[in-house]
Image 1 (tube, rainbow, N blue to C red):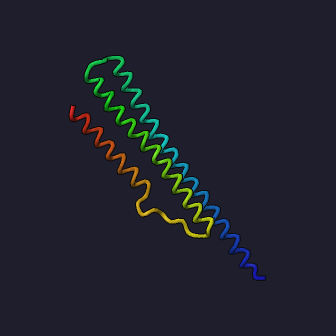
Image 2 (cartoon, rainbow, N blue to C red):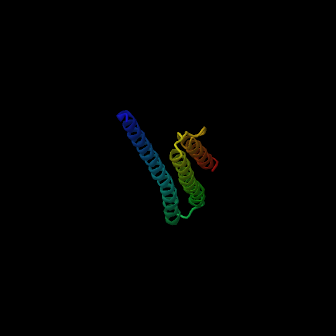
Image 3 (cartoon, rainbow, N blue to C red):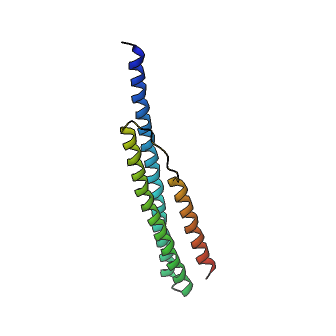
Amino acid sequence: PDPRVGLAQQRTRLAKFRTRLALDRTALAWIRTALTMATFGFGTVGFFRSLRAASPTPDAIQLHQAAIRFGVGLVVLGIGSIVLAGVSQWRALRRLERDEVPESAQWPLSLTASLLLAILGAAALGSLLMR
């Protein structure tokens, strides 16, 4: 038997293994990012809650209500990112197991998250400027 065939098969298995590890790193990065968004959302609500408790003026109450909307938006965005990252990971691993090449999405999760964060930030800014 030709020794190059065995070597090619080994390289293919190693390439598949490296791809699986890269997919895992990407999924873990999304989990870290999503947890950071959710944590920031909870922190924002807590910070403005303490401001409201220290000075229960109408402005502080309005700020707290806006912070709740912003914080909930970040938590929802974080949860959605984790779910979408999990689905993306599962689909890519399935394709890899079928010896197909995993494909990137036409509309990547990073672009979606960036766009939603920009919208959430603009809404928060608009809410602050409208007071």
